[in-house]
Image 1 (cartoon, each protein chain N blue to C red):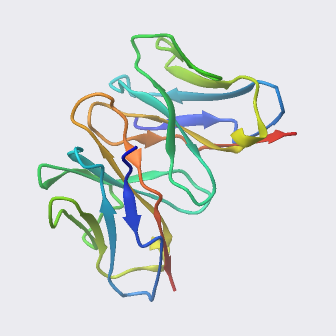
Image 2 (image 1 turned 90 degrees about the vertical axis):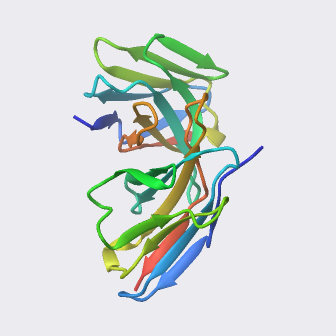
Length: 114
Length: 111
């Protein structure tokens, strides 16, 4: 069964450093999403992406964040200057343009900012 | 208006019992209501989902009940098993837009 993959599984970085989280969505999906989950809390939406542009973003997704689809398979989330409060699990999700309406989630990247 | 409220926060059920988790939403534009199951260190995995044009959907031991007029929906897990111990999130969305998640319910099924 096709699945969303994410790399790395765990990223440790120093405050102020840039990080890039990578995702490979399911191959025939065209809608892509990033969510994050602070330990023990609910899953929060960051940004959605379709047709090579951002379709929606949350208030969390400020100028420090950017997304890109650099080629036909990868979808990346970049945090330019990490803060301590960026420490969280980051999940990529994708969905097809037709049914089912399900967003399929990857296993996540645990980001630890020291 | 974008919130989805979920209860209880945690739940302990005996093996073989029924687990019930409730959610309520405010935005009547939502048209898709999935439940996700999450094990520690893993991503949310779709369990079952419903659209507002039906009042109930059953898949194996899992049933969603949906009350459109009350803007509430619930997950029932019949014959709960220790392997069902996980965190369960309800969510809602409209079209291709973001999922709005509930706060999660940590379920423990005791042997």
